[in-house]
Length: 237
Image (cartoon, rainbow, N blue to C red; front, side, top):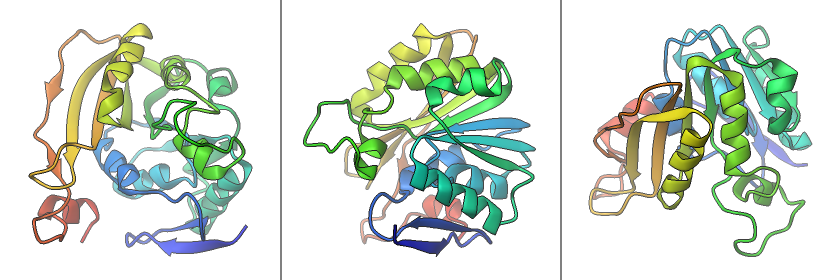
């Protein structure tokens, strides 16, 4: 597979497909949203490893495990970790996230992050073996699979950080409560001030009491098409 080594502008680099699925702003926003005082973290659906690599630069988290089912993506993630000298902090495993609680241990992690496939299986034209399809559609895992695995991995009071589409928000809340993770914090993302939200950042806590706090919306672009001040800060500009 053709690939490129991209500069993350924070002292780190990442291998990505030259053409095909690449990380987007949703992963960058999730990594910023998930900054915490956790000591151990798991990243599900890690792709090329962007979220643990970004978090390793932003936080003092001691250890990240990261799971990816696609061989080529997992291989790039492993090589990106090595290229950045992060082998002592980030471990990438090529496996099915549904097996993660048994492989890594139940109730082990302070934090789980996940940028899951957004689209339900059967929606639109898909190629089951295509990298983009596996990354965008629930063909290899469902939202329920993601939340069930997260609940198994998290310690009591551990936090699940997720980014998803607003159209799936009811499903996200349903599955989180179903598996004992209470939605506690939410922030919507709008492309511009006058546009509808197109992403939502969610934090749930395992075993917490009900009470949801909604933060002010995060706006990505100014009216002239430039990034807003907050987005520039998130990107470290």
